[in-house]
Length: 445
Image (cartoon, rainbow, N blue to C red):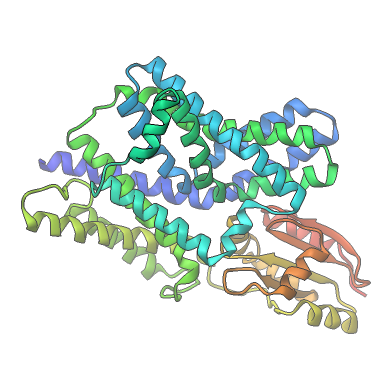
């Protein structure tokens, strides 16, 4: 590979890393922005508009990193292997998306009726470890450890039922929906909460079905047009290596809550610069442009070191972006009962925040709203309590506190006046200005 090609490849990798970082930080914000117009449309009876917003939310969710493995499945199985034309690729992709929608609709309705939310499953360490293993397996496939395909026994069964065509694509869509489920927490929290309170099961089912269709738009396009992509060569090898690197980063992302904190919680310039340098070194060493299939073992070793460096560097940058800005912080207490007693004794209003490390919107609140100097200052006349529902921190008592507010998912912020009455609650990301206005509206005794 000549120098010019290497430069283009490095720049492409940097752009890809930038897209990954932006999707990590902006997703909760963007999806939260849809909640208010969605609620307004429902109140005005504009069901078509509400469904349109749900569809847009599905498209937004498809841009999150934990959906990336499904892109690899779509390209590998439908566009690059089974489809013989764009029309056939479109048919297979449509069945794949329909399979996703078919699974999401009943699962979502069950979650609504039983009080569960997909995103809350990320509080379970076994779920986190399982997701990490899924990403590692997909990464290994992208690097050529094994060929990504349906198991032979499963393919034989599908063949007897009509072939690994539309039926196989539909079944694979059902399975792949489980991979995407953890990404859907912010949106499904709003949808399922509304369904469970309104008891409008029919519209709830339609909303979840439309949401799944929006989630599948990207995969329909990829599966339809992947037939035109090269089936082999250095180009495809570089693309697969890029996906494999991103998937390893996501594996670390899900394991982060289970690992010791090796990086500071606050943003430090050294972590950002160091991560970018390590990532660039990994790319230069060969994380993308070299191959594990090379007959030269020094090349394979160099590739392995490059992948390791690129993954560690990207993870460091993501950790920095998810860190809290340095400066003054809200003085949170951890015990809700203790906070209620203090608020009553001192005649102060109460600010309650339920959060978790797996909750994307909760991280956005920490980085942008709760770290705003004006919000920190305004919070000083409140008794502020944070209930941490992260893996390893969940207790029956904390679950009971959340149940008191009849809330099915996170985030949840509740503002009480000095008399103890609830005056405002937020169930999505809220901008500092809006949150500050709500705090200011609560008077003290």
